[in-house]
Image 1 (spheres, rainbow, N blue to C red):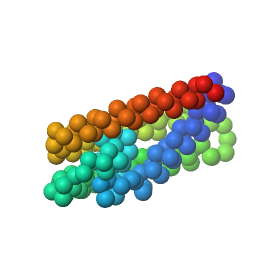
Image 2 (cartoon, rainbow, N blue to C red):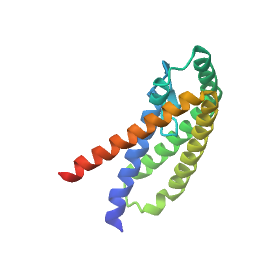
Image 3 (tube, rainbow, N blue to C red):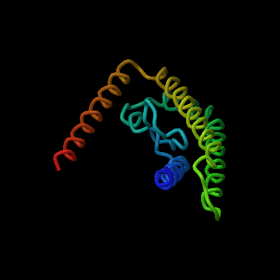
Image 4 (cartoon, one colour):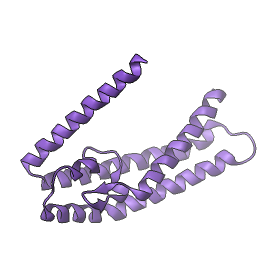
Length: 159
């Protein structure tokens, strides 16, 4: 059990750091900075870049993103605070049991669930802006990505 915590805790801290770091810059979203909303979701920003949104749609998407940005910022700030508290405990001198991080781990899980729900809300609002043709193109892109993922998986399995 002790060996497992030496591996799991640093991996958890690293994943939290990577998750929160990726949120700071964010990918593009049809010519706009996606900021914190560029994380995993049903409608990744790179897909929107491929859908040839009209100027009106781009304005609507920007409005949707703006409407949710304060919530995302708050959740990411809370996640960073929780991560910092975990790091303080982790790097403090003395023994550390995995149970010492239980509260923060639960907070991280709750915050990640809230982030996922907020991202889903954004995705659904943006989906409502798209035309049936754009939705079909998005589905085609998703299928292409799935096929490419399978090809990559097969390449790595063969070696």
